[in-house]
Image (cartoon, rainbow, N blue to C red; front, side):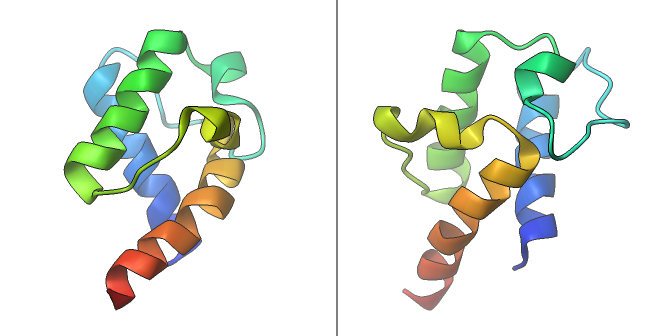
Amino acid sequence: MDKEKVKQIVLDIIAEIAPDEDLTDVKPEVRLRDQLDLDSMDFLDIVMELRKQHGIEVPEAEYRQLESLDSSAEYLFPKFEAKAVA
């Protein structure tokens, strides 16, 4: 598992919850909400899918860590690594 794989996992979840979004040109450093038509419910869905599909918990106070692909990878990578070791 590396940070690029984590970014792909986030993109795959976005593709599931917002299938009409074009994800081909998503810039990893730009806030997802500035690039895509995502609302707060979509972000909640992302968090729920991370938990359901991968067992990754994201506390509400840390949702801002998922603003961009880069910040998502930085935040989620250690969580995926911890799961892989456990």
